[in-house]
Length: 269
Image 1 (tube, one colour):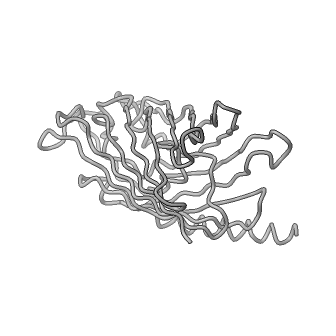
Image 2 (tube, one colour):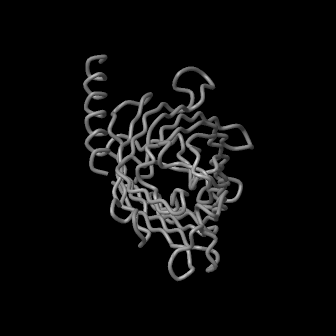
Image 3 (cartoon, rainbow, N blue to C red):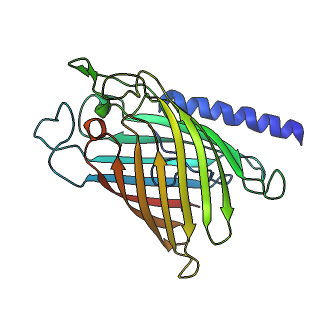
């Protein structure tokens, strides 16, 4: 059994390296930040995420041509690759476009996550996950000495660790930490702002229906990714759900105006 597990882990790391070498990606997430959820073995997942600006008046510095912040579209698959109950892993890649340079020169990136579910280590043990996302090349630009990080999402190479526990009535509480590329994640003054906290709460509203899920998540950091997001998901079928959410970006000079998000999630088979 141990030899099989070692061989499976080697295979998983090989697949991960292959995915990361070719491909921005989103692992299984809450709304904006990663979650401790991991796709089961040989279960595929397709996400189609859209971010629509809530205002047409640009807050970006420097402003984009035309005075309106970009909308964002992201599509990509993720699949579980370990056949074990207590240790699981997923890998994936995404295609993300914002219809603006320079990020559209490098629209692909990869992700991976490995972890263990709640109660798997001992009774009442939390779910634990570690991984990386937004792994890939980037092309950064500068204007007046300020990093134009509004246009750079790939190349962030974000590593993270999360722990989560589901509490009676309250729901699931998650907390973790991330660390990304110092050259890609900077504050408005061009100083590195490449680490911070990941926090979230989520709950399926079983008192009403098993189809309704609510969540809130937070990513700290004075960088292009810092945000608090709120959302609700409705399961239209056993394997199809849609999140309707709203993202409040911490520094709109870097990230632009707040966004409405719709996220279609499909599991297969």
